[in-house]
Amino acid sequence: MKRTKEPYREYYQELRALTVFRDLLSLPLFQKLMALLDAADQMEKLPSPAHTAQTAEAYCDFAAELYAYPPEKGDFLSANFSRILRTLVLDSENCYMRAKASGHETAAPIETRLQQELDFLQRLSSLSDQSFCDSLESGGWETSLPHWNTSPISLAEDYYRRIELLPQTGWGIFASCHTFLFDERGLVPVRHPDLQSLSELSGYERERTQVLRNTENFMDGGTASNVLLYGDAGTGKSSTIKAIANSLKNRGLRLVEVKKNQLYRIPDLLDQLSGNPLKFILFIDDLSFSGNDDNFAALKAILEGGVAACGKNVLIYATSNRRHLVKETMTERQGDELYLNDTLQETMSLAARFGLTITFQKPGKDAYLSIVRDLAKQYGLEMDDEELCIKAEAYAIRSNGRSPRTAKHFVELQKAGL
Image (cartoon, rainbow, N blue to C red; front, side, top):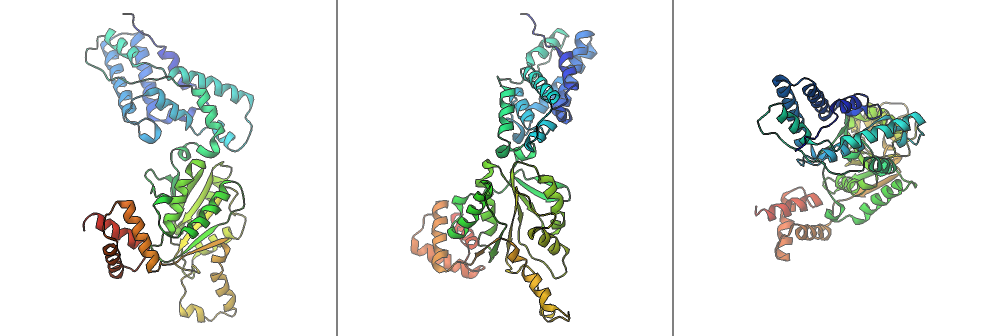
């Protein structure tokens, strides 16, 4: 059978010359591919046992990287080179992608180079394992070798389609994840976020609908407000925000959790997100301040429209158990400041700077038992209604009182037989 030959040197040189997609060369998969192509080319030119062994080792290094490619970047354990290559190309955060995301036109040389590189990557996507195996066998290699799959793809068509869908899909980390943390490292993707759904939440339909409508208006480009969800612990404030973010992620919504001690860095984050076609909710959980907290002033300036105010693609959603957000002592209230009332008004007015404040109060008995019944149905808990209600009330008395969190813990324990 005639041996299949691949243009190893041509592929190697084309990879070295990538410009628009140059970020791909920093990925281990491409680095190992280039090492394999270079070794195979040397083996073709100067056949020797040493070159054969070097090529076999590079081949297995590349196959191992391909086999273990993580699920968020390709087909997990499918070993399909074509599909993994396609995913990496579509998620490449390059100059062309950033320009299109910002609504800018690109120069003709860049457009030409993009098409040239897409054509090359299309050819590369069909790179066969058989050609390497044939070359190694011809060089005297006798041990069995791993294999990978390829499949037909339409890379250019898929890429230009991705550009059109940037406001919904994003690119880079924004394409593979929809939930992020913001800390001293910057934006950090959450690979395994809380997948809470709206259908799993019980009670507080009116409150939840207000938050959802505001968020949908935001997604549609209409008038929307920063939101403060205030109320008792365990009433579902944080779960509401997470569930809404999950429900709208395919429309281009991303959730960024910001810790209270990072609020002074929000202007940097806003600069980073400006021009991004996606929409972002900055989520601040359990928000409260002490009297002399620099983060208080930072958040106040952002909410009231200072020079670092939120752009059209960013809103702030915060939860708090404190109506006025500031921890205040009696000494501070009595104080010795000449214009004490002005200071008190300033600290109490922060909550008012959120355009929408929604209160989540602890449920009464009937509302609590309604939540218990709904959760019992979701969990498939079969129990006489009277017995269910009696046990649920007893559990609430032993716990922190009635709340959706208490109801969930009770049903989970009953389902587990505890």
